[in-house]
Length: 290
Image (cartoon, rainbow, N blue to C red):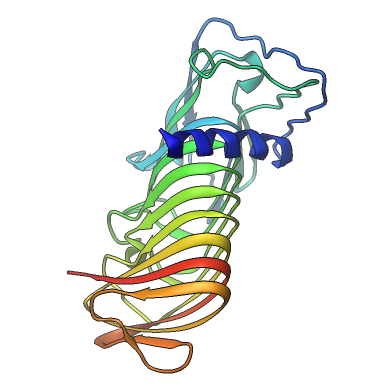
């Protein structure tokens, strides 16, 4: 209950600051809800390659999974605020799906039991660069078995799980994740098959699980504020980590060993993970998994 209360407060703060077309000025004003509508989204694969897919999502629930086959995107959007009606804009290889522009003049007093904005999307296996920009939302995102050339995720106050449940079908250049005050779990990261990963976060609780199959050497750059960051690497994978931080604690679990003043190492074979972590304050947990 306490965690949910904290997240609700963070979500309100995120709505004040996120760049998603929401402006808030006092005094208060209600957001008008209406009948729930369901909109079907079917987006064909552009003739140009690779596709550039952008998902622009405000507040609500975002679910993404594989399963659209040769289509770029299929799914539904369910909403009961008319200004959240999705828009699809296509220009050559670039496709943007956005949740509309909701401008609130006054602090919103939406009852969360009445407010509804849910996207259930499936993505195809065509080669693409994928961007996800979201505000205060709950997310369940599975990107396993796709052909992602680059991935860029930006969100505000999120409670989200992002998973690569199966190997990415192509080599990914950069995986970039930027978040505010959030509760984020990233798993199956070795399956993403990235060359470099950049993770930026504010205060929150973050788990980066490099489960899956590491196919090549990869570099990971992590910067976080006052937070708890947990890094999980399977036993037998070679990993080296350098850490800088303020009032931070490093908790070693499993096969991780300290190899220098601010260096830690996991003995293994095959490709190597090179990880750099910079934290303002908080707790860094290094774990191994079977």
